[in-house]
Image 1 (tube, rainbow, N blue to C red):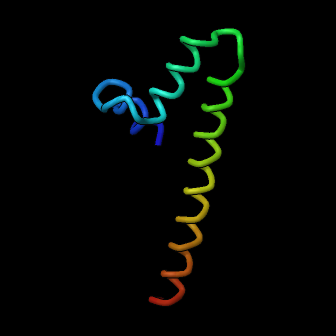
Image 2: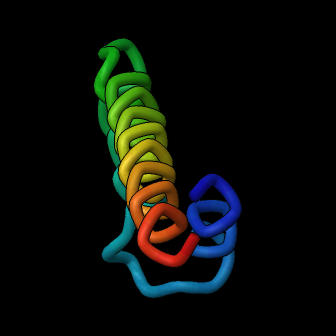
Length: 64
């Protein structure tokens, strides 16, 4: 997830997570909005990883 965000930072149009972080920091450098965005990204990453791990375990039980 972090690799995708860094890739978006350099090459994607201005409608992505990296743009949100940069835009928040540029407009409001004293607010914690950019930090909160990073926390949300980390939470989404951990939740996605957990759900994929559960799906993998379920698939392995069916196969094996």
